[in-house]
Image: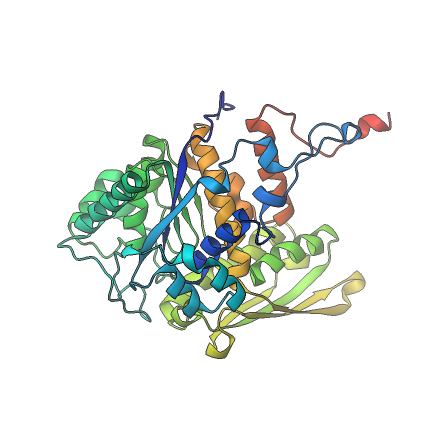
Length: 437
């Protein structure tokens, strides 16, 4: 891809539409409201708190990311979305119980004005949920066209100049690519025929892409990672990224596993279990939805450790993942890991990790960064899969002939080098040999 020329400035309002207005979405929306009113700090957001080194270390140039690239201002974000329940964002945030009373009270006026649009929902794809605030249509194509009209109506009502759509909904059942996913034409035909290989998440993605709107998938569903939609994204000059926000346990794996590999420490097994009590936990209590999440989580170690290249170290790993729905925990999930490694002469060692994390607190800054970076990519003329945003995902998308990069540190370097490339700065290699010649 050619380096972007002039990046269009972020003039006007940026519309942010989330599919699903539950814990993640409302925590994100409330956080942006509090942050732009100076009532909170955007901890965890690279776009708001991160810096980027430019040039040599001796130049001492490390501006904030938001001062280096022309990102949209938080004051220009306008929010909306869809949900299977009619609750306002404030009511949904209260039920999600992620935020404390002080933050809820502070954001009540703002959140109370955000009403969800009716969702395109089919319980066959999310067995554990049933909704009352749902669209009706004879075919899936009808529903997709209704979503397109929702996008147009939101844009007109709020006078936004640009829009981004992010799937923050529940995990759908496990699906594999089907012949109907091959081309834009076969995809449209399948929607009109109500083909079971067309999941609700795909309807939102198709509607966004054909409306010229960037789309990100925050769940492990098969959604935009099919040929029909990636081709449509190229045709419509739309950037895409996904899938499955990298928040708790998998975040730790992408931090720890590269360290083991760098030191060439062997591994016999990695056992992971989670307890989670929010809506996501309830949905994942269904075996078909869990299968989708399991596939996303299991792939991380294989790609990082590369057992085919290092069979003596990683060729016999026993990798197990479990998720248990436990309502008392709510959004405060616990990820427990037992890691069996071995070192010099094969002597065994163990590492235990107990991560008591807050799922939506970790996800909210990811949503913010993706909104701003996708908008930047769109204004830069970038289209299709944005692999440089892999940093944020458990199952990052990439070109068909590539394997996905899961190493968090390589992902971080790729993201920042992409920003340098976009702005015409030299890429950072960390070689530094010129200091010692």
